[in-house]
Amino acid sequence: MLEQVRRTIQRFHLIAPGQRIAVACSGGPDSTALLLSLVQLSPDLGCTLSLAHFNHRLRGEESDQDEQFVRNLAERLEFPVHVTTADVRGCAQRVRANLEETARRLRYEFFFSLVESGQADRVAVGHTADDQAETVLHRLVRGTGTRGLAGIYPVVENRVIRPLLEIRRHELLDWLQGQKQPWREDPSNQDLRHMRNRIRHQLLPLLTEYNPRIVEILAGTAEIARDEEAFWEDYLQPALAQSVRWEEDRVRIEIALLRQMPPAVARRVLRNALREARKHYSARQQTEQARSAAVSVGSADFEQIQRLLDLALHGQSGSSLSLPRRVVARKEFSSLWLEAGGRPQTTFPGYFYQVEVPSVVPIPETGSSFTFELISLASDQPRYNIREEDLLDRRVAQDPLILRNWRPGDAYQPKGHWKVRKLKELFQRRRVSSSERERWPVVVAGGQIVWSRGWGIAEGIAPPPDSEEALRIQESKS
Image 1 (tube, one colour):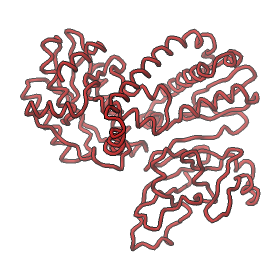
Image 2 (tube, one colour):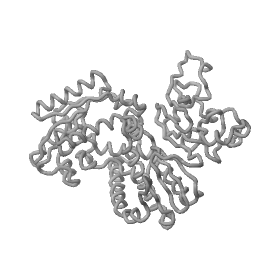
Image 3 (cartoon, one colour):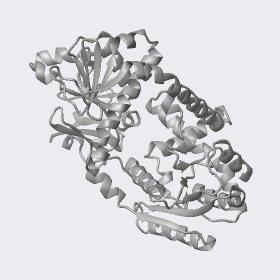
Image 4 (cartoon, rainbow, N blue to C red):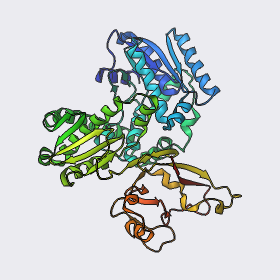
């Protein structure tokens, strides 16, 4: 295993002689193995080591025991240790962000701060080949393109490195046992309510039955995708320089040049332009809440880019489109404009939010917010006490959920109706005005509408009679 770690470090130029490496150590098997392997390799690598531990305070006394475990390791090895603590749960609740994403953001802010403050040159983290495979599968399930398939990078912003990225987890555990080194276990890694854990404990073992080398194959796919992305970054520079401009605090794209490009190139030009607009918006955020909100807003890259391309090539001048992170796209004659934090001038741009369960999703466009949560259907609780038109089969929450506004052509079969109906027809029967229609919320799963305001859940989406849990959708005024 040590030789493979050495080859990975050399292959990706992770550590240079004389560098100070802070080893991120949670106390778990991956980070503990990372630490001990670098301890044995450091004389040949010519680097000096320290430990870095982030206490998330998510598991009470157990989190404090993890911290003490790492401090004991540092004392035994006579290494400096950098420790910080944060109220991750409280921070996530304050900004209404996903708990795991908030934990990751705060953890990496800590790692980056060690480099920025001069306490380390790089921070080593313990992601393995199995983590790479899980990441690729997770993104495939949620929907992704080549960029998402690239998975975990060996080096992040020249500050974070991953020396174990070509090591299998079972090899790592065998090596640790051979070293007679104990480690800490995090019970939350067994919680199958989290998609990542279901992929680790259910999907990957199932795929291994079809191909015992599935982890290596997915890791290889990620490497191919990373190389593809690196090629495109260089290839696109002339096209971006020619077709994309910053003007008056907005990104301008020349539609005539976009028309001449193959679709693959046009999509990537738009994706880069959108990324620049979002970066500009994020840089303008001043508060922690605003920064976290910008991070937590979901996005469906391919659909966004395709809608942008359709607007550019087929939309009428003056039409616009609203995208996550408060970016508005507007077509004006021969140009497509992307404005960070802008607002459409005429037509309603629509909205599109990817939803995690549980979460509260504010919709400024409607002046309301939506709560998505799993609730218990206790056998002693009569169901007539609950609004059944807002209760969905909990399995729907396993798919990526999209909360968006009504679009022309939308249709579904509300529960109790005998056929599929266009929402436009339902609007006409209920005399819903045009201004109300364009802001009308629907929830989509698997490409199908499963819920709409006013008519509730779709036929066949109700929880089965023996269900112990259901997904509840509630709308409330902001």
